Amino acid sequence: MSKPEAIELEARSLQDGVSMACATLGVSPKEIEVEVLEKRTAPEDADKRYRLRITSRVAGKAPGAGESDGAAKDGEAHEDSRDGRWLVLCREDGIHLVVNPPTGGGRPCTTEGVTRGLADAKVRGVDAAAVEAAVRAQSSQPVKVAAAQPEIIVDGKAEVVVSRDKMQAEIVVFPPSGGRKVTLDDALRLLRERGVLVGIDEDALRRAIALESPRVPVIVARGKVPVNGENGRIEYGLFADRAAGRPAEMEDGRVDFYNLSIVENVVTGQVLATRIPPTDGQPGQTVTGETIKAKPGRPVNILAGTNTEVVENGSKLVATSDGQAVQTSNGRLSVFPVYEVKGDVDFSTGNIDFIGSVVVRGSVAHGFSIKAGNDVTIEGHVDSATIEAGRNVTIRGGVQGRGKGRITAGGTVSVKFIESAEITAGGDIQVGEAVMHSIINARRRVIVSGKKGLVVGGSIKALEEVRAKVIGSTFATSTDIEVGVDPILYQEMVATANALRETEADLIRTQQAIKLLKDMQEKGELPTDKRALLLKLTRNQFQLTGKREDLMNRKAEIEKSLEQRQHGRVRALEVVYPGARVTIGHSTMLVTDPVIRCSLYLAEHGEIAIGAY
Image 1 (cartoon, rainbow, N blue to C red):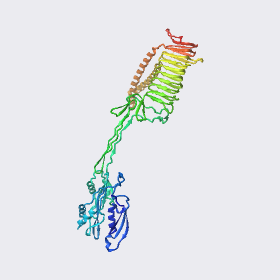
Image 2: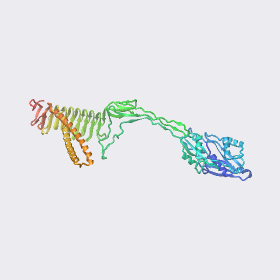
Image 3: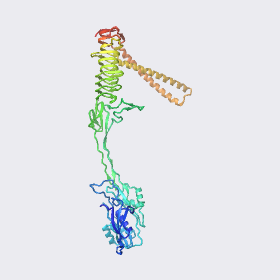
Image 4: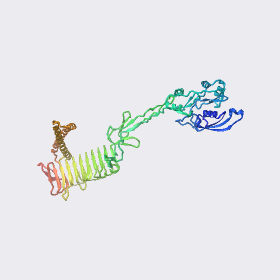
């Protein structure tokens, strides 16, 4: 039942009216406004001299009602339970009892409890029938229950209100009238009697007891709200440490627009995603000690895509092939062995570094690079860029290297034309039109066919054969052709020799430093900090010695392989112009006159011979 915000009553005095109104409205005297509607003077109206309207300033609040964490359901007003209350009014004509009804599911006052309270207050000559009638009526109106007495001693008391959801408890402390004040132990005992066992705030209890304005509800216990479990989730081992499509920031703070980290490479067996199971959550508890179950989280499943597999009882997703990891629109993670660029490789894509094959539908702009573990196919042209492939490179257009372009392939390179570029292939290099002023190295053959079939300028090396229509030009352009030697092995030979020279130089410097420190040690002049340096240099000496030995062995192996030169061949379908220099094995021939439709090879006597094409 809802409580009034204002009441009208009749009382012997203003003080009696205020006391009855505060008891009925559940507020303190400071929280009401008193309006005198009528003041009677007739002798017969001595008991009803004042007719008052008393309004609570705490609008819309039930007496002692506390705030609630939950909303009312089905349009009903929320109402906390409160036990019935009673109070004693001391008047000139006698002792009057006011009994207020309970609210919500609260307990009503009992005749036994009121009688015991009156006895505790030392009220003499109590009319038991009047007490029983007042308790039964619960009218909130004063009922005379005893004759006037010189002094009534009333102990302080407290009431506990537990919210409907049992998630909080309030206490209202009533001051004594000449009697004993409510103590902390009293309040704790009352809480226990009302079943409040959990979340008691003793500091709040002390504040409630010490309030200057009594009858103000104070929250003294709070339940524990349950924490629902977290739903299961999928943690991806990819895409976490990079911002795809954003330029990489270099150590000096500059931005590298050539590297956008668009491609996500994975290898077979790599864990792509891990399923994290849901949690159960943490149960809550009401102030009365009842457990509130938490809502457990929902599980989630990993969905396998192309070239992926769910393993370990559905807890992990792994790649079943090398390639690019892509999360498709249906949420599945797939691995594709081919990375396709719809247009050009430029600032919109950045450099490409992919474990599988790369297909570029456009061209490769100046300064960019493509690195692929397998094949690279470019539909357009390559402009002074770097291309590296573990297998074959196919370029439908040409390569305009500008002295900076470089292409390296573990297999065959096929291209329309090459100009001012460096090309290295572990197999054949097949050119459709021309090779101009470039450095060409093929572990097998260099074949330049097509309408022009031109090789002019630069250096062309192949182990087995160099074949073209025209070699050189009418301007006697210097053009070096070499066959019979593995050019890639020769490059390794040069690199190994350079590394060996550097290692030997480092070793000599290290040995000199060690000798100097040891001389100081023999003289007793070696500082403490130099002892650690001596130990470090000694370890470095052993490392450099081992490295030098490895390089010497590799150099000897390469030299032995290069000595076993093959008898390669140079063939020109139309002409070899003066200015061309042909090397086969250890023999070299400088062409001084045009040689028509010929084949150059190494004769039995070790000299280069000219034969028919």
